[in-house]
Length: 221
Image (cartoon, rainbow, N blue to C red; front, side, top):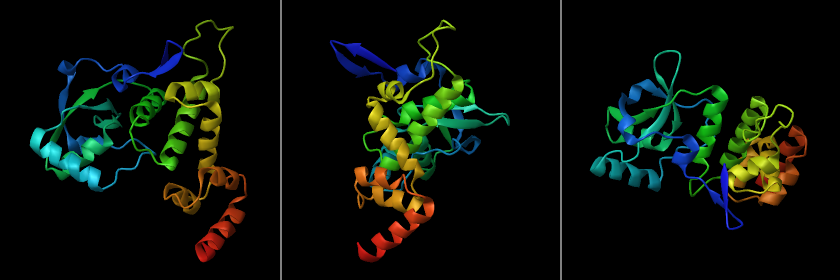
């Protein structure tokens, strides 16, 4: 969600978005008992930034606890902190500090997206699938969270979803269009080999035609 200050939109912090309690509620949980969020759209890469995170954990430990929710098997599902969990494993940690929060499936999707979409570097594919996941979850919930009267409730629109992440409705719609691309073309968007606007146009083509376009681009540049 957003706050409006002096005519400008102020994005809430991750802690505000998640309703995170005080650090005193942190638990030490075995890494082996934490599994990834299903269809998690944010990539965890073994790149230079991961190397820096591993070095930081080895030197200082985990400064910010991850956010998890309990599952039906007595283990935990990651909500926020996939990169920290991966880095902690590389660093040789057996346990990781975590805040455990009970939440429904749709609440977990919304909070997972809100916690990760504020990262500095987000690939177009990551933003596309995370926005689609959030919109689907919020529409399944059925109504605006800031409207309490049954007569006033309305479905969330792309404009309203955009307000929660600092984007315009048109941008939200365009990003979600990328989820209709075949994986090969979407990878080229992430690699900046295809411009965003062109990718949106391509998303309206049938899958077989997209495959022909991909083969043509691969062969001819």
